[in-house]
Length: 395
Image 1: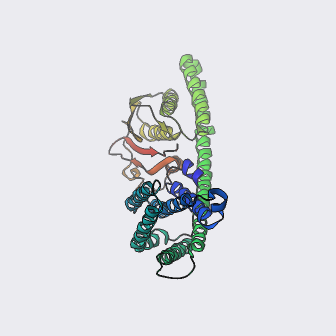
Image 2: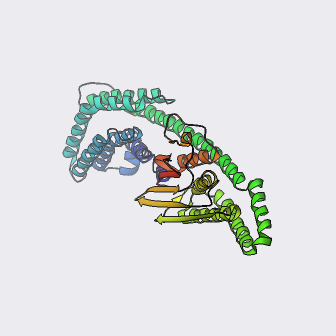
Image 3: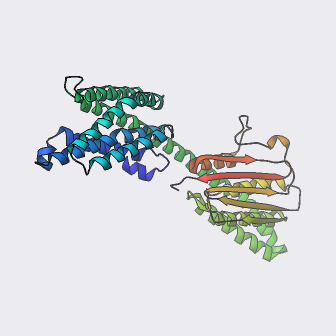
């Protein structure tokens, strides 16, 4: 989980959970084994100090894990308990045995006071429709009951053996089962999404090197060889460059926006030469960012197909704005207005059937964007697409 916490920064609960496991393991080793004789010898005071200081941080780390596993609910309380544990630790470490015991009593009384909240938080955060969630909740409640029992024993209110160490083992087992199942499900979702994206990549690649597209482009070049050799040469060079760039970008997860823009320029040039139209492409704003490959090419290609069937000239404008890690891209042209029913919002609950290009864009954004993403087409006249996304922090 420590490794997962460093690799998967979006899943913020891995680090506190790994810290909780480390502290629990160290506390069990110090308090329940022969470590006193092996490591501390006659230094009984330091043995007690270490035992108490490890105990202080078990509940705060568990609270922090619960809050982050529940998407931030209760994290303020967890941070307060960490500060209290740190204060008790700073007071007890340089002090004598009496002060250490007083700090221990403060912790015990505080634990008794917040135990109802711990039970409530565990119930709210863990009792979800996940496999092993009920087992996990039962383990937390069992640990709370046994910890309260042990505190009452240490305060001489009850007279029996301590049992919290045994219930702690059930808690750790429940946590491992719960998070292990979460990890397996996340891996399965990732593999499924990767397979879906790979299939769409192949569809997009076949679409961009479709025999009809190549045949029409080459036929246009053959016709231009006799009429306008320079124009034919430009068409062939632009076509080769577009094919090369498309194949290279189809193998990448992300690409520089400038590279994607250049691919769009190549496609506009190919279509302008082939269709004998005067189509221009203007870019505004910053290019210092990354984008899932072939997204803008798909948008520009659709714009040419649907916007310039009868018109002999027109223009595209790509406007890019970046605020911190959020990117806004507007692609529009002054071509023929599409039919009203073709206007759609990707977040609308009632969508018309979408083609390979739109499905590819949605899949890429879903795979690479953190927290949320939006793809929206707005077409009051001509062709306009608004693209807004935030890349994952680990990308």
